Amino acid sequence: MAETKTPPANANENCVGPTSESAGNASACEGCPNQQACASGTFNSPEAQQKELKEQEALQSAFKNVSHVVLILSGKGGVGKSTLSAQICHALSGRGFAVGLLDVDLCGPSIPRMMGVAHEGAVVHRSGSGAWTPVYASPNLAVMSISFLLPDSDAAVVWRGPRKNALIQQFLTDTDWEGDTGGLDYLIIDTPPGTSDEHISTVQFLQKASAISGAVVVTTPEEVSMADVRKELNFCEKTKVPVLGIVENMATYQKRLSDLTYLRQDGSDVTEEVLLEIQEKCPELLEVLACSEVFPTSGPGPEGMAKSYNTSHWGKIPLDSKLCQCCELGKSFVENYPSSLAAKSLNKIIDNLINVLPVELVEHDESLEET
Image 1: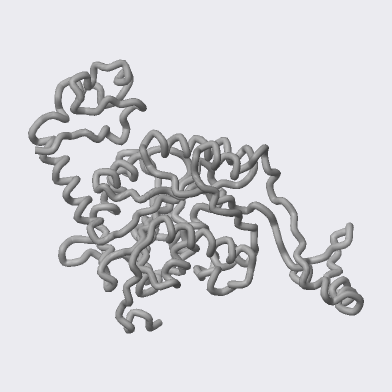
Image 2 (image 1 turned 180 degrees about the vertical axis):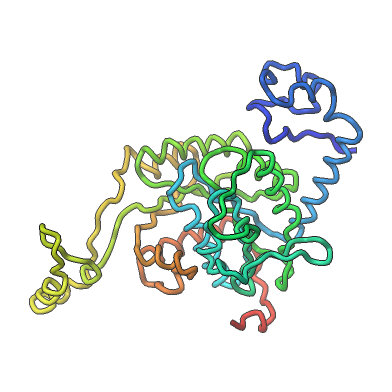
């Protein structure tokens, strides 16, 4: 019979494990909400071990047809985790891979809009076996989010940790990713900021299924962001989640002179006059890129941080208003603006991911390519 080795999601840091001989009595157990249960041997009972075994088997079964599971992480909010998650999935599916996107940002689920499935018809159904069928943005791109389960798009999720943990377990155990593609080449998991309940639960459940391929960590270049991202990198070290690479988002702002708006100091718009003047006197300037830092880079920046944590810096994505627009409309940026610098950066990140986690690309049924 399997032993219950995984600490509960709400356990203290440095938990000795609920089946340890010192469980409930070690110094690390002080103040833990599970201390009494561990000391009494509750987690060692035959019933507890049987429950643990069933959970592990259910999780392993859920991921048997998923080649790679990648977490998108950052200790900081607002750095573009959901943007990167969505555009990675759009790009991978555009290259012919079978892709799933799981949104575990339970309190701020923005993925459905970014994937173009934030509409009334986007609902999750239960199959005959009881599994959840995800919503499909395209025949080879499946999406799962709490947003599909809420009564309306503005409903607030006011849940404590145990209820969040239970839903994450349901997402990971009950979602049927097989679909018409026979499974997934890549499952991307978009996470909220921080290192709290959602992260601990997601990692522990995936580890039970032996399903974590690694994490991509997102940051912006200033110290305010990197200070929190270093906490996320330490979280990955402690939980033994491999960091595949660090992505530096919003590194610069770049835009063609022809796409800029020009104002006088009093705020009046003189764009038409300025562009006309440039067109008449020096038209080649209209294709020149104006570039500016969005955030000040601190010290060696994200590249130095990557070196200090012995991981790879996967590149810099410039801030691009068209990328933001694609996310609003649920469209693929690299497909719609392939020649932009941000698209080239995103494609390099996709290449890195495929190189680190290769899969054999299988030709799917031609009917799946129909739109």
